[in-house]
Length: 309
Image 1: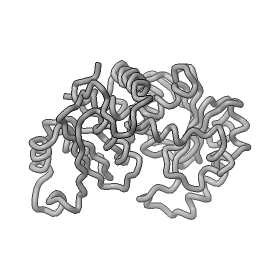
Image 2 (image 1 turned 60 degrees about the vertical axis):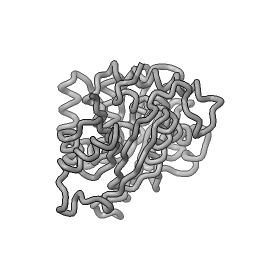
Image 3 (image 1 turned 90 degrees about the vertical axis):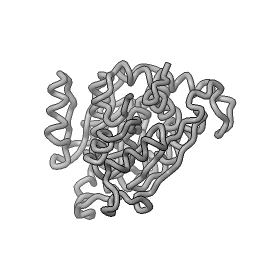
Image 4 (image 1 turned 180 degrees about the vertical axis):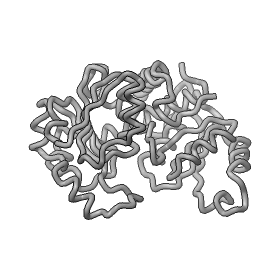
């Protein structure tokens, strides 16, 4: 049984195999409509149980379509509809019930410890749909999108992140180690990645490059990533944080330091961290990026269900 919780815990060869499978499946779906099932119906009769403790649009829709296109089904649970967390049923007992009824469990949570606890008690695979420290399904899909656009392995590209150090960046850092690509990070000094993240990179004999100047971070970039500076549950002085990132707002000037054909990507939803002149121009591929979540998550499901070939 394979879980998908953090990119750093998945072997690089397995991550590459997921991407290879996703590419094949996307090509084979070119003439199929949204709810038509893949011809090999690899997950016929399988049920994915989803639980969202945080708001979700792309993760919710993409996982629903992913399991449906593979021939299975999905049911979505809301935490306030369960006994879990109200003192009526332990997490261990909830996990055992999920294991009885479902074949896989996707959790989007505000607590990394909860992911680890479910992993301990589940007898079915768990997929991390987002947690405070990690967003592995998003970033693996982003790697897929980058390689699709640039038509070359990401290891041959210069990747830049401009914005806050958050769960998406943590997973992008893990991806930079697994796929061996150069990663520049541009953010204010006090918003740099946590020491334990940087130590993990160092312990894996890799290096990322930190800049407190967005222009320097963007220099010679093939792809520039960003994310919302103020997230939904960000417990900070929001006006102060927005001010701190004022010089990191992505506009045409910052993009001009990158390569001429530089691609802009954003996992959405967006805020004030990118101007329309970038977000809405031809360099921006955010809608393709969102669509590809379905294709990659299908192959992640197959990986966890032991059906990846």
